[in-house]
Amino acid sequence: MARQPYYRWLAAPVTDTELAAAYRANALFDAHRDDPEFGHRFLADEARAAGEPMTERTAWKISRDNRWWSTFRKRRGRGKTVKAGPPVSAHVSSERRASRCRLHQEAIVDHLFTVMGEAATPIARTGLAAEGLLERQHLQEWVIAHPQVLGESVLVVTAEYDRWADTDGVPARDRLDVLGLDATGRLVVVELKRGAADRDVHLQAITYAALVSRFDLSTLAQAHRDFLSRRGQNLDFDACRQRLLDHVDGEWSPELLQRPRQVIIAADFPKQVTHSVVWLSEMSLDIDLIQVGLWKVEGHVVAGFTKVYPTPEVEEFTLAPARVEGEAAAKKLQERARSRNAVHVLVGAGLLPEGTKLLMTPRHGTTEAIRNAINAWVEGDISRATAVWTNNTAQPLVWDADGASYSPTGLANHIFTSVTSRTADGVQGTTWWDVDTSHVPSDVDSEEWATLAGLNLSGLAKQLNGTRKDWTELHTLLGAVPAGRWTTYGDVAAVIGSHAVPVGRHLSTCGQCPTPWRVLNAAGRVSNGFQWADQTRTDTPAEILKTEGVRFNGAVADADKRLGPDALRQLLDT
Image (cartoon, rainbow, N blue to C red; front, side, top):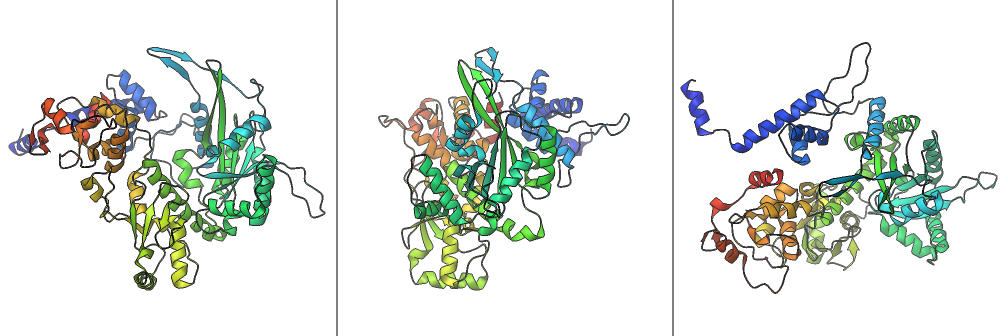
């Protein structure tokens, strides 16, 4: 070997982590080459059998980084097959998407087991008809009671609606199963089938969507009032109307009402439906297919709802309206959905404690002249530029100027109109509100809180996208940190996909976290916001760490004992 390469290697030899990652990548690639149809979960199983165990998350990351994508083999003439290729793009054929939809359906319930230690017992699949369960009496009531199966923040407006008539005044016989309203202001048309869907079920859904697309606020309010009355809730027309208005994030939009989203729920879907729905989605109709499955577990019937189309890998290509006549409505929908998603991400991650102070800086949807006008308007009353955060997904901001609750976009629109006397067009309100880091919540480490400086709600949500309040992985990770070692809130957050602030807040309130004293702030100090979940404890994290062999230089722990993100990931994989 020549000296120059040798000395380069000597200066930066391959680490154990890099070597382990290389072996894992080789095992995954061998499995992918043998079975290119496999997804990352199957690849992880194959790699484990080959002597390279890893978590499914690690398998997914390695596959993604190396652009190894699953494909489905399809005959292309004699002796020819499709080889594994790049990820799907906007021009993927309807036939391939429909095939993925069908495979996604089949993969959902391949195998289900009850597990006790090393024993795994298959769970018997059943169906609504086999259990004597009915479409209207049971399936429909499940959806009404749990509208989250239809998507985020759906309010049920009515069910079994049949009060429409033709031009001669003759009542129609069609009965709409469920009609909902989501927080972006779109109607949700729901068609239910307790067994396999009919081959023309999508045509029924389209018919209902066409009928409700002509509804206005008054029609919906009356339908909602009648629906609640049938169920024993007496609200007057004005109260129902206000309930619908409050549910929508932003101003009520007749344009969005004309673009209903359709949801078809059934035990199975024939090929005619999946192919048609994929094509209709490409033609800018928004249709979801949700499969309902039933299993018998220890004498109980368990129901599961799973979206089988759009599948995650094609959803981004099929949902947004793309026709010229729909561009204005699509833009409004995108802005509202983006704003609402940001709020849901922040609330779901638990990043901002109740009472967090926010500062306004007008950004998205404004010109420099409008921003200057808003700033001048704020100088007349400084409370106009501040708000308080509450973990309410519908209206999380309490404006200091009037004490009323708003959504971020709703308040931005209100301020815009107050200053300009015009209606805002497509404002993304989550970009207007920054965290005021000069006010530190009592249960948050001040140094970690300072990292939020200069970030608006939209930016925070992008950092946290995908985070949920499921702390199982955190508990597993903390249980793996050995005595005599420590890590930081930020390092833990980087591994589990969260942020240092919600991690610290969780540790201070969770009685199940195994070793919270082994997590310090970024400076290696015990957080000034640290508190035991058990309020009777009087010892300190530093005292426990010292007994475990960690030396402290004043209040700072020995940096050599710190476990960074790479080391923590290794602990999860072992």
